Image 1 (tube, rainbow, N blue to C red):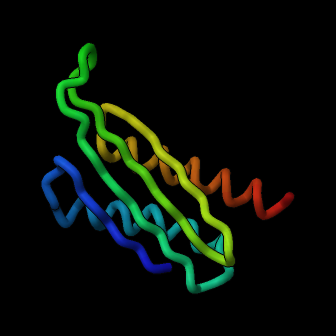
Image 2 (cartoon, one colour):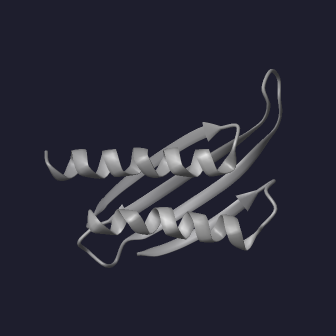
Length: 98
């Protein structure tokens, strides 16, 4: 799986990038075609009005002629990435067994 990461208002760190690669690679067991493309965007929404800063994680996954889009918002970037991966897994599994 080819994984591309785009950061918006988030400082790049090896820890965040490694976490994204680790979580998105877990999806490979559901994608049997090795030519999958996963574009991940991590963004920090500035000054959320009630709960402080919010982080948004989005993924656009393309494989075998199918395209999946998932997004998650949380107050912690790692939680947003993890929730995004869970949503992507559910969507891929649901589509696979239809």
